[in-house]
Image (cartoon, rainbow, N blue to C red; front, side, top):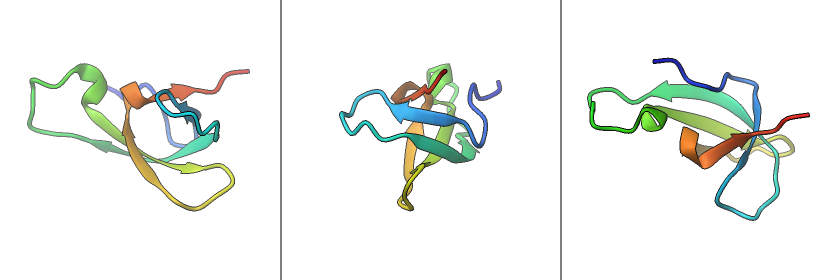
Length: 67
């Protein structure tokens, strides 16, 4: 299984009203649990495009910025 996002992709958070654009800086694989939903097999380290703090989110918690 491959992640749907790549390092450098721009995303935003689906469940928060912070309206900040984030960039994916690292992708980690979660191993050893076959009961996970396929969208939960990866953790994405993201940081604000204009900032330094980082967060870890799953595929279901982020959404791509298009156009």
